[in-house]
Image (cartoon, rainbow, N blue to C red; front, side, top):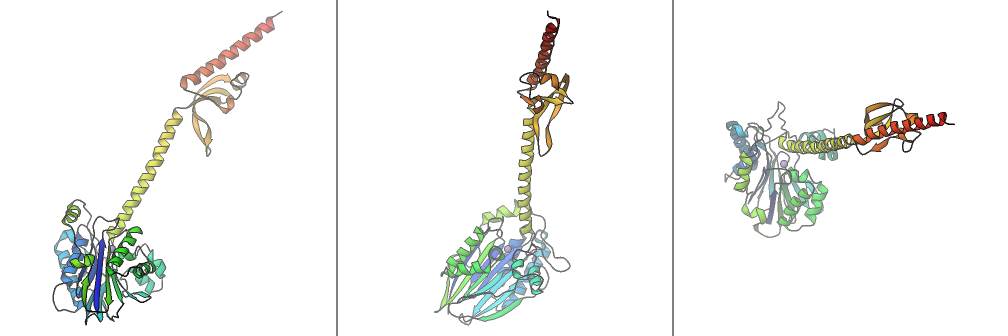
Length: 397
Ligand code: MN
C-alpha cells in the first residue's frame, strides 16, 4: 500500500497561541492538543509528540504512557507549566500499510472515510461524551453543550493514564483523518465528510478542513492530518507533513511567553476532571468587551440626551400659573422630560387671552432661558395694557 499524507495546523481566529502539535513521519502520525496556562499548552503538546516520536521499538500505547510520564514530570518540576496536559491521538501504520494501530487519550479524534462510510474511530474522553453514553443527553446536544470542553482523561496530569487502542485493517481507498477539537467543535461530521469527499488530494483536504473551521468561527487552534491509503508502495508526505512536525516560529514563541501573562493553568479536581480554561476565558473576555461597548453606547446616549434637554426651555403651566420650564414638553414612556424653573403669579386664564399664548398649556418652546423669562414679562405687559384699556373704557363717556 502507498500512503499519501497531508497536514495543516492553524492558530484559528480567537487564540493567541497555537497549542496544537502534530507529527507526520512514517510510520507514526500524531495530533496533540495542549492545554494549561502560560506556555503550558504548547509545552505539553510538543513534549508529548517528541517523546512519542523517539525511535524506540515500544508499542504505541506504551509510548503514549511514556509521553504522559514526561509531561507529568515536567509539569511537577516547573511551576510556570504546572497542571499542563495534552490530548494525544496517534496512528502507527505497519505491515506495508495494511494495518493501522490507533492510540487515543482526550478529545482529539480519528476518523475513517471508507467509500461512502464516514465514522469516528475514537470516543472523546469528555464529560459530555460520558453523559451521551449514559443516555442523559443526545449527541446533537453534546455538540453545543456548555461543558463540552471538560476532559475526563488527559495526557500529563496524573502519573498514569488509561490509553484507548485498536487495530484496523486498511483497504486501498481508505482515508484516515486525525484532528484536534478546533475542527470538530466548529463543524459537524457531515460537513467534514462533504469536504473530504470533494478534495481527492490529502493536502488539499487537510487545508480545506482548516479553512472551513476558520470560516465557521475558528474559536480554537485547528490541526488536521489526512492519510490516504492507495495502491502502490511507499509514503508521500505533502505540504506541512513534509516537514515531519508542526513548526512554531521563534517570533510567535517569544510573543506569547512573556508578553501575555496568563494565570496558572487548570488543575485536576478530585474527580480528575480538567477544564479547558483558556478556551472559556477567551469567550468570557469577548462577552465582557461586548457588554462594555453596549453600556458605553447607552450611557453616552443618555448623557447626550440629558445635555440636549438641559439646553431646552419653554413656557408652560404649573399649578394654574404661567411658568418657565427647562427641558421638553411631553414625556417618553410616561417619564417627564422637564422641570419647573420658575412659577409666576400670572393665572393661565389671563395669559390665554393673548396671541401667541392661547396654547400655553401645551408648552411654548423658547430658544433659551432669557427668552422664556421675557415671554412672562411680555404676558404681564399685555395683561396690564388690557386692564388699562378696560379701565379707560369704564371711565369713558
Ligand atoms: Mn483544542
